[in-house]
Length: 407
Image (cartoon, rainbow, N blue to C red; front, side):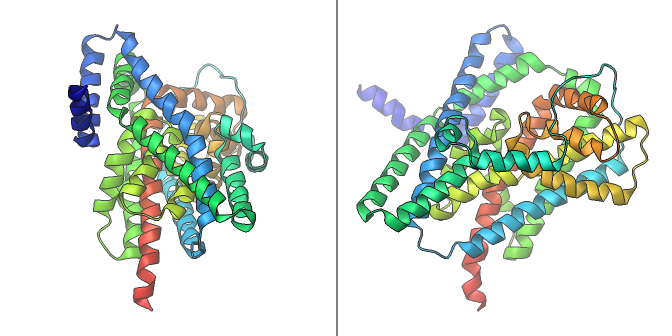
């Protein structure tokens, strides 16, 4: 028993990032050498399932507890944060327009795919509003974060107005218990990453690069420029300090996990844990992180814009730069609703294509291609979106801390 305790202590004392990197390397090697050992991939499935299962409960309890205990003063901080989220997403869409015009890509459109698309922005926002007022228990069980946020805030306000201090403290203690549970799950991240990497390496191979290499490079390139250039520039203009140490911390401790889990929901507990380690205000980040998973959708805006312009180039539609810039606004608004649509950003491509008069049958072929390259596109998109949630949460809080010094 003593030896087991010693091993567990040594395990938890070792840097989590180093342990994850070790799992990454081992998973890649096993995927290349013994791809037939499919049982290894179960580790990744179990890890992601555990995070997805606990995340809705964590968000619901933390947000309700944070609102109930809030002392005020968060309004200006949230306005700053929402502005950062929306501005960053719009800039991502504009960068995708510029990239698509500088390096136009065409697609191999052959067989017509079938499927459902949201159709237009009215459908997207109707879906968002409907999800907002879904039964709170169903919202938690279905991981509907719009509904979870809405009801958690309402319940938190009700607790603040009517509940006794002991009741509010009990809710806060329960939030601490759920947070500790999340920490225990995160300790198994190296094994989960090992299984996820093994699965990707053994199944995907290099076909994605050979068939759709130009498209993948354009998508990833636009996302990286947004993450490494425009987002740090926003932070620098606000804080007047080097933003890259903060950015690289977010990419290393949040983006790395999100890249392999390919799930913003699964990364919410990891982001909250990172915010706690960074000493950020729990009342703020317990709401800002799940909010970011809903509206901070840079990668989704890039995907919608690049894919729809690629379809337009392929079928010979003449797209003016002014029309493409207007597409950026549509992509920004649509991306903010991507989490409420089955299939995420890919199924919003037909909506954007309809702006150019391109039919659903043709547009859905681009959706099919998106699923093929999703092993790369979706991984990078999730990593950059999720790490950006922490990056802008920290930026907004640091900016708020600076303001008294300027008065």
